[in-house]
Length: 289
Length: 124
Image (cartoon, rainbow over all chains, first blue to last red; front, side, top):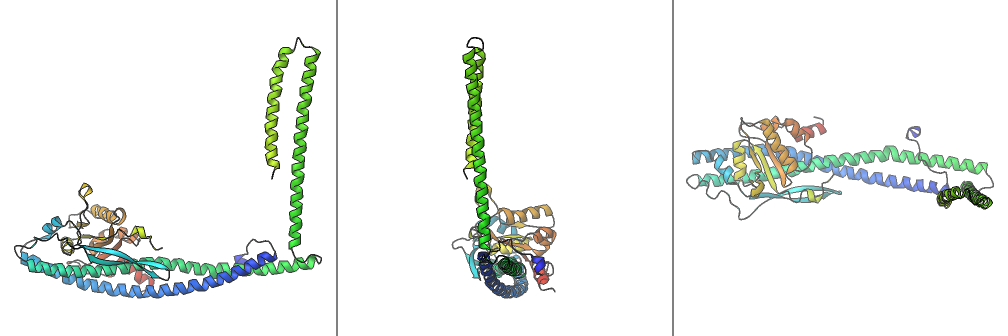
């Protein structure tokens, strides 16, 4: 087991041992909390699935009754009113609003039906005959739709809970089977390493002094590098100076003939100087850590 | 995860895809809504034997994906059967897709995509 999960990459110090111990404690607390959350959600989930099953059966009955009352309407009206109804539908009278319910930190939306007052698209439907049947049919269907809305909120809760429970269970398993064993393994390893280091270096109290020494070595190395770079820059500067002096001497020796070449070489040297200066700056940037 | 408030605050209508009797009855209950004239959209679709499956498909996509004001989509089970793959593939919590029985087709719990999941979860 311990071989399979590995251990975390930490320096063997007393400080990281303390950190690991805290982490283990935190993981255990988190595990028990998540486990409880998962149980609460699962309980709710089973309740909801049972109610969905019931509501679906109820829906079958209610819709049957509603269909029957619609058949009554077409008998009373003596014709098809479907087209008329479809054309006169303009504003929804029957609407739903959504509310939230909090189940152990999971927000479950629930639909709640309400009727928009003052909207009546079917005022003239059934004016000639069958008005009473139509009125009854509307009430029956309104009740049926209420059942449907109830079922819809159960179903939405079902879908959301299903997903949340999966996520929570995945986390519980990850903590139980990966994080806790790995942290325990790391702690074990740290103990062993610290004991070894104590045995090896009797003069040092713990492994910290060893690490400090490593730090000092690193600092010394960086200092050495920056010193070398400075020396290189100084050498380059000296070379350029020497070249310029040499050019001036040559010019002084025979001022007539190579005047053109001198004027030609001087800017070249200047340009070279500039470029080296630029290089020097870059090196300085590097040197400053 | 739980959907954010903005995704369902303005969802207040029901939509229906069904045969003529189901749609008529539900419209009588007052769920019918037509949006403002420039892009007038109905929230119901009447399906008969002549309706193309592609049209049902398009209405289903419109009600589930494009329109943001629909909270519940009611669909007759025998029509859901025609676009079963879309209904089964749709797993978002909003809008809630609800399969309802129709006059000629009694309700069969075995075909319902949600009840199928319930059954599977309990290993029946």
